[in-house]
Image 1 (tube, rainbow, N blue to C red):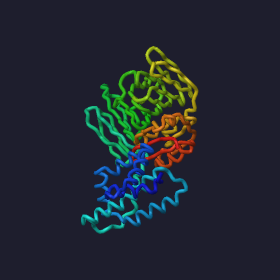
Image 2 (image 1 turned 90 degrees about the vertical axis):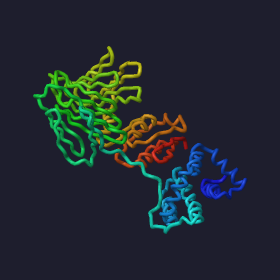
Image 3 (image 1 turned 30 degrees about the vertical axis):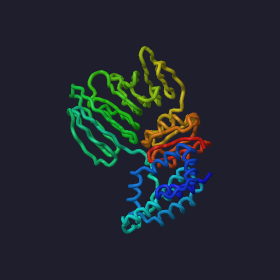
Image 4 (image 1 turned 120 degrees about the vertical axis):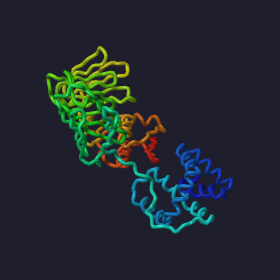
Length: 385
């Protein structure tokens, strides 16, 4: 069997129509060796891919770019399978250049840095604010400070969050919605002073100004609440067939639509967690779990593991890789594919910074032992080494 280093030459011959029967057999064996190889082959043979590469070779210093890739490989003590993709792609560029030259389409080559696989970036501070009248505002860390008034309430937008300054004279309750997409996080200060930190792929529906006895909000996804104490006006969070009622406390709620369980983790204070006819009172350090059958279970937990995201950290303790990748995928906005189902059961203990590039997360997770990550654009393929 040929090694992957020789595959670029065979792919080049396919493009140039000079592949022998023996070489075709070798290439076919390589394609059948793994689904990754077959996908790579199809990508390279794709007409759109060829057009893209043809345009690139007219603007790239091929020799220096390829040598940079080689030197980069030498600097890396640990070679991952993703480097195979870079190697093969680099090898294919050369015959594509020959094709461009043959048809007289060559332009002057520029001094462009080496072409490498795109880097998956971490998430950022961003959200969409939907006002009661349906108008929307895009919020991010790049937004300059601004102030506007809605229903007599001042809304201050800053680069790290949005805050509402309540007006007790308001008697009509109107709702806004704060949506945080995949790859985002955002914080909001409600009109009563309660601070809510929203994680990726989450949505909070809340009144512009709290009116009446209860302070009620609606959550989908995950959020950390730091509730302003007011015994006369309980704070209530409704989410996915369950309710959390508090007086003044700090807690985390995780209620994603695509997950079977709803988790409520209490950091300090007291909360009552309810679902249907069942109800439990939580003390600090306790967590309520609502399963898909509507049953509530409580357990003692390390609250840091469930709230570290608010501090810019991923924290795991003997966590299954499948659960870890759900969290990671939302933050880095990537798609995860399991080529070996058994890898879902691999466990990991450790901490990682949320604002690190994805490559560092991969390095940490691959320390679990026999797990390998193959990165292609925003798609992550997980397999056994």
